Image 1 (cartoon, rainbow, N blue to C red):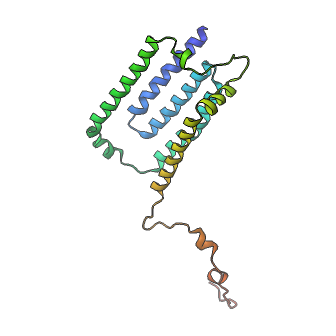
Image 2 (image 1 turned 120 degrees about the vertical axis):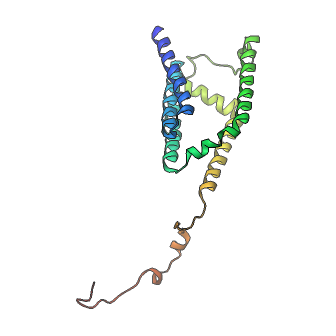
Image 3 (image 1 turned 90 degrees about the vertical axis):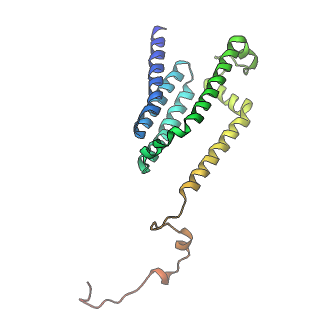
Length: 204
């Protein structure tokens, strides 16, 4: 029990510190690396509460795909971050407003749990006994039954984000040659093959 408590405080402290460094680091590459560290420690917390499947998905999907993609995009794009930070103060009122709204929502959630202690038993889905069902099965039952529509909505949001990323990057620029597959497939032999009769000792 003491080992679990020490592991929890260790993972939680590193997670909070790395989350702060994600937004405090000046170098965006360092921010992505701290984000990967935060994901690993969050996975450790999930393992401590018995959610091994969620921890595995967090490491495989977020660390193995999303964070690496962030790192690839940040390193490939030539962005002037000093110029971006120069106009950040004009968005400060909007950021403070959004932060206050989030704090009020968190206070309402915590206040509800304090006022109505039995809220979890009333609003939560019925949970079977741990010896009757495993973690992955229980998660699948919740996602594909109680939260099926929300799961589909999340998929649509990801699809829209993917289409938006393609539209933003798929633009024609001068001096950049693009591959035209239909033109390549429709070429005739006489357009690409030329037979030259080179005389003896006449080569270059």
